[in-house]
Image 1 (cartoon, rainbow, N blue to C red):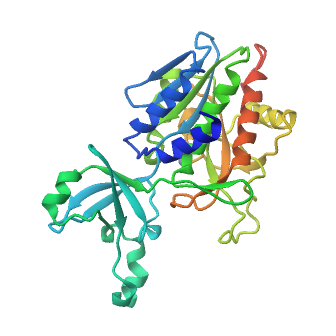
Image 2 (image 1 turned 60 degrees about the vertical axis):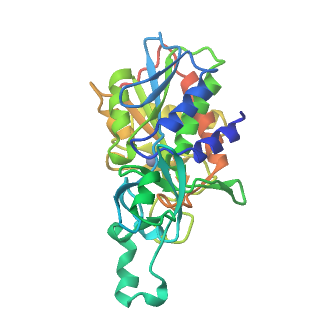
Image 3 (image 1 turned 90 degrees about the vertical axis):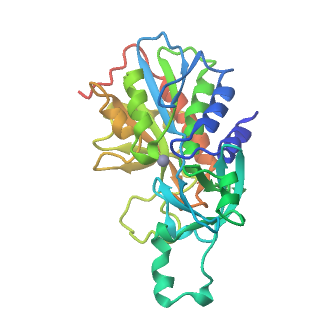
Length: 352
Ligand SMILES: [Zn+2]
């Protein structure tokens, strides 16, 4: 499987938060030819390692889970009412095609809505953001028929398909954070034929969308010296970003490299040097606060970790039409592989 097919496979495989097993199977299957060891922990994280006997450990985290819906009620008419798994944007649900992931396999559904002709003006304004007004129609005649296919607690995702746009852009649900997962695994693959002075751990973390939970448990067990989260970051090059004083972030102009309290200054400098060395563009991403991604909990695992975050510019985050650029993925893999191989026994990550 080439790299692009691997990415598309990740995007077409469901990974609702808390039910990531199908995508973790893809990771294990793909990475066994490159890794020295692969472990799945009790929480569900898949930990892919190179050189695991090395004393110094570098962790790359890409979260594999995607925002989704969970079935909580089946009506007597056979419609499914749902709760949000992670930060679902209710405003984009109406009219969406979804897939319910059941024990017996995927079931097609759609999210219906009262026709505009019948809506009161109040309904037109307010139903948009109320998850209690969202139902899935799977075409069942009644509750009994629906229950033959779907169980309470099953998860549903947007229909998982990939759309390629102009200028190397790609759109799919769950680019957050399958692109980061892809970058972490591709970096390990690129490093697999190099002689490393460190152990490299690429982790497919679970449950990021409900509180950075897989990064918390896997950082504890790996106990790395350096931990880098690769996750999507908000692009600003589309309408809707009116703050002209915000730090710009463009698709295709390279991944972002963070700075600020959630970023170790030595790692930051080395990432920027790696970008220069590989002639890969990058964009600055200053943050005055702890980040909202896996780097947050990795940094404060155990006695503290030298953390940073690589951001993949992303438009329309948490909708079914997220957009990223293939280019940024390529650059991110180059920067991270160069970073890992530039670590020598003398490298000291302590901020001095
Ligand atoms: Zn994410």
